[in-house]
Length: 84
Image (cartoon, rainbow, N blue to C red; front, side):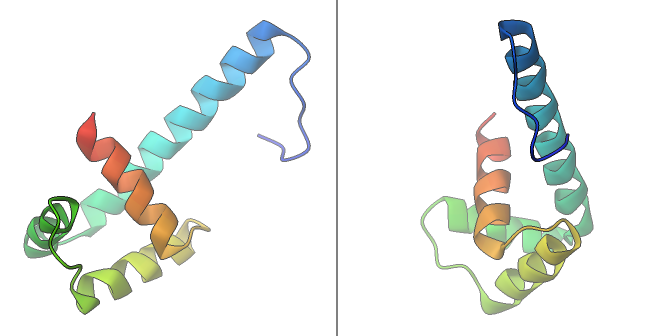
C-alpha cells in the first residue's frame, strides 16, 4: 500500500483497512515465530503484568527493525494479536 494513497470510496476504505490488518497479522505471526518458546512465555508474562525482561526487549527491537517497527509497535502488535 502506497503511503500517499487516499481512499476515494467506502469500498476502497474497507479494502485498505483489510489490507492493513492482514499485513499486521502476517507481521505479528512472523515475529511470533521468530521467538524461542522461553521468550514467548516471558512475553506472555509481560502481557499479564510482569516486567519485560531485557533480553526479550532487545530481541523485539531487533525483529522490529526488520519490519520497520519500534519495539513498542511490536509489543502493541503482538499484544493485539494475543487477545484475538
